Amino acid sequence: MRIAVIDDEKYSRVELIHQICQQLPQAEILEAGNGVQAMALLEKESFDILFIDIHLGDMEGTTVASLARRLMPKAKIIFATAYSEYAVTAFELGVDNYILKPFDPARIRQVLEQCRQAQPPAAGAVNRLAISSNRHTILLDVDEITYIETDGSGRGCVLHTLSGEEYTDNSPMSEYESRLDGQGFYRIHKTCLVRLKYIQDIFPWNNSSFALRVRGSSSPLPIGRDRVKELRRRLRI
Image 1 (spheres, rainbow, N blue to C red):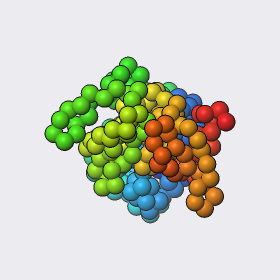
Image 2: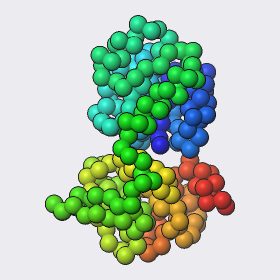
Image 3: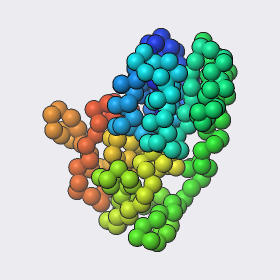
Image 4: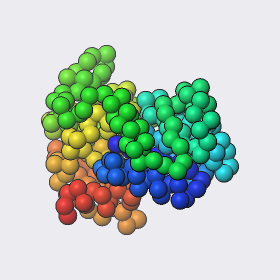
């Protein structure tokens, strides 16, 4: 699960991230300290849940929420505010929930649980994915998938398999990451989701970075600099 915490108060960001980690230790959390940073973050990344302060230093959180809704229509948007009267505003603007400062751990737990319950059924129980490709619906075994990458247009993904077959689909990367949560996949880059058990080797890449290859493919897959440490942890290397 990928979560964004957007707040111009550093203490609030740190505290909220800490409480989220207490509830979802496996979540990948990114942060932004103002509206401009938030806009740049949303243009590059996708999220399942966004916590957005209503009053950012350089713009209103409602502006950021509006962009997030356009870019990630299935994401859950949670407003954070120190003023309870903004709770009504939050729902009028079509966001999914709100939390009040100072943050109450019980309230954070409640909101996160509501977000989880609103997601599709747990991917751990899914053995096949329905892929819409070339006007056909293909039922693809999850265990056949080696990696998934964005199609370059920003509108869909390409699924790569052990057999070498490739399937295109219109679903965004964030949806696949959510659907396959708990199935042994890890997002090594904003454009690539990899099945961990099919990684064959990791090697130096451009500008002191790293890349990897998966079984059945010779294509190098770059690893984001901020993803290397967590990848090594998951692979226990």
